Length: 419
Image (cartoon, rainbow, N blue to C red; front, side, top):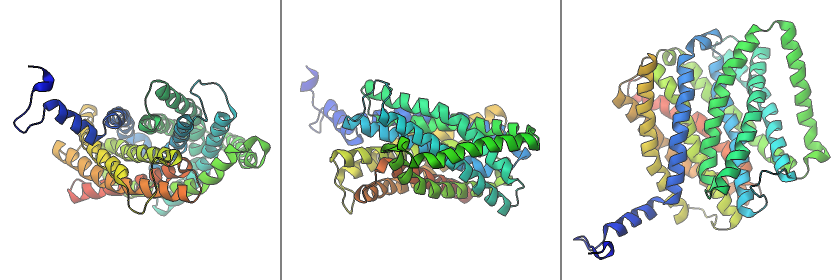
């Protein structure tokens, strides 16, 4: 009997049931998104492990914990937005994936570097203010230099990686909207956190003269970053990216620093529970990556005219919502399990396996519920107002996910009696 002639007692073949299930869950969208998110989760756990075993360095400058979430989030905001724009350019034929230089690509790269310089100064200032409010001692010069040094060093790596992953995924027949954001946020985590600790070590080793010289060099870059948008070099793409991105990134940086203040306020408790510290970066980045996938897909759909903006999310948007919740279950469960065993392997304390997994899944699904609507309505509002959603939606999501994600995870852990 052929496979096609078999029928179950309910009158449907297993093949048809399987195909229907695949269709319901999104097929290619699920496979590509789930693969990239799972891969990114393991990478982000590496970042969490670095954080978990770096408590001694944090004790040298506890105020750094206030800077960590916004610095990581800002790297994701700037370069995931770049990846989303590149995906849109590839979909609409404005850019070809041949890695050759073009005005469009050069101005996007320049805008991303300028944003990194300006936002690093801003985050250093904000983190100093918040740290002082929390009673954590730090000088403004030290914090700004740490933020700038880590930002500049990471920008070059992130720029090359973002262009590569967008072009390579497109050339391999993958949808960049499904894979760029998780991989870029992963790279942002893996690159940014070690460089923050390196910058901490380097700045604390400097005398006052060396700090002033480094500050002068960065001041020159900052002035150039402010002037360039008003020159012919920035027209037309760079200027639009900067004008649309800076206000959003300023708000994103503030929200990210508030997330850092939540960690700073829980500093004593978190230092004693390394397993939670290991989980936090990956949890935040998974939430942001899921939101980034949605934002990138909504942006491409609005640009292509395949999705109408309506007051209530249409069927296609609701299907994407369901896919994200489905993907979130294994991703956050894997996060809790892996963080627990990594904690045991490096000898740090951790809640029980059941608590770690339960907290990760519960907090993760709450976070996805919020990010679904934020991604849709932010993309819709940006498009209707004449802005490019690629420039504004991902920074909004990244910033909100930092504060919402940290608050949700800490809240669930407190509810479960873990902290």
